Length: 231
Image (cartoon, rainbow, N blue to C red):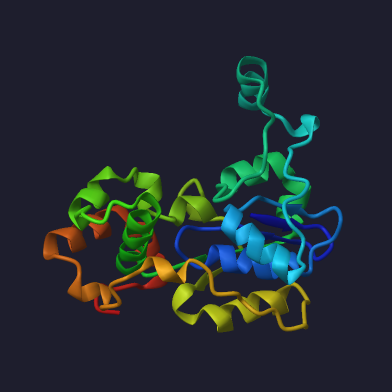
């Protein structure tokens, strides 16, 4: 997640949509007061090598705390933070209506069948569980992991100004930059690409039952973006 007060935008990072690459690229134009949430150490290393800003200002100010944030502080002694994959409803509450309503808000989504195949290979790569069957991976996932819609929606309605497509990532990223007045080109670094070892199209890797399972959990983004299993 990135909140730029300098450029008046909020980027909500969804899962398996090149969100880390977008965060790294956006870090290049962030100012001292902007919010940048931490990413994985290996990705922070890339951001550092590029000379871009790293995590900063991710602690939530006390005057923005909700009851749950005070409870966490008192019981677990943990400060509230802005974090990766933060939901719009939480970002709005912790940023306040003035910032939320006046800044350009954007996010990205992806064909859910392709996205879950990508997530599957990422989990296998990260855990070293090479024998994990795809159907077992699916049933192990919580609903909020299966669908990205809850990140950029509030009360089941889209809460951002623009939802770009992973399938047209560069063009849609540039469209978002144009909306916030950034004219300099921002290159998207290629991160996490080595995780997927099987490069076959997702349609060749998903059974009819798995297709229906994913569709049942991702109805909102399928309807919003017009995704189809064959697309």
